[in-house]
Length: 416
Image (tube, rainbow, N blue to C red):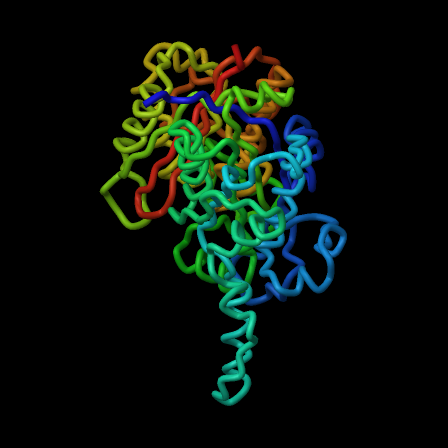
């Protein structure tokens, strides 16, 4: 079977540091922090009182009010980011064969706010089961790609991948293979999350996963820093239009990059903790390079999972050193979560957009908030600390890992 080439022709982003692709990029290269006190609910009794919320966002600026009310925030975010990506790709929806356009989306949690509110309403109603008829359709994780396909009439493969924080990277890998194997000409892919809720924050606090740097939220997400104390929860969405190369070329589409390959692995170690030596992470990067037919020395830039947790950051950097050897010190390594926070199931998508835009603009965004050396981290690694660095990026990798030991990696290259 012929393996087809796959390229990126459209991007869309809705993030805590910018509500469009261009605003997102501007926020990244300027080292903007998206963390601030939470505005969605009273945080008085919560250990963590801040998050990376969207700023200046109103769903009805993008969606009809009636339409928006039928969707949980995570689905609203998916619709908005995917609309931007489809417009960016300049897809002619009257001419494209919609039978061969798929939507493969990722989310780690889905409609958490909807679930939370309906259960609270039930409890306050003395046990009377008066649930909103949209409760289930708003909550279920697969509704985001369903809504995208219904709006545009896309009739190809349509489903959601759920692998915790690796969800949207898994979705991109599935989208890549759907086109490579000839099942689709185009796939709209990415991920969205809206977990800045009392249940989301309370649950992650109970696990001691979140930073509690309440006195300085804008500096709380500090990957690789010796004083890091947990991740900062973020929300939003990232969308990419992936397209078969000849299909894109025939319609004169702008091509951002080629999706060179991807990899998957499992830590098979612990429910939430990474393997301390990064064994599964080593395997996923090796798998990715092999799948892409690339050598370690081909890679110029890695956007790490880099969540700002004490264990995870060290394990990932150890794995990078094992896979890339001496070349590791020549790679621009960064963590854009230092600015966006951790978007859970949407993280892989927005970080893939970041590496693609690094290729386009020749700049690698910084890892901000670094002030203290961690003695467990190799000082020769270039972690792109505190300031963006110019770099001709020809090949870039994006790492994404999830609770349960799910590891996903996608690699992009400049088009030949």
